[in-house]
Length: 143
Image (tube, rainbow, N blue to C red; front, top):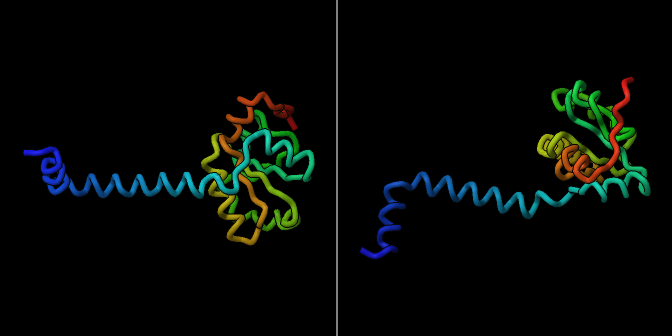
């Protein structure tokens, strides 16, 4: 029995595993192609903040935000984000950088804002973890 025929037999008996593999590969490829569009790394974010007056929105819970956040970032936690997007209308003409802890929740917030007509929305790649790894400053003052 050749390797090819064994593979065909295995695929026939475990088609659901190959279907799952195909779905996962498709999602990974989609993420690689589309996921990096609309994202900025920490250094690009600082450039946008300094030269384009970009607004930073932190979607972490208020307790995490209080422990340390990007200077001048607004805190709109993800659990109520959809209901509070109207408060961001005044920033529609500016670049908006969304951050969370690792970059995954902020990508959902970016999608939500794009659906509501915001054009210049960027996800901070790697979130606050990447920001700290780049040795960029955090505001740790109590309000």
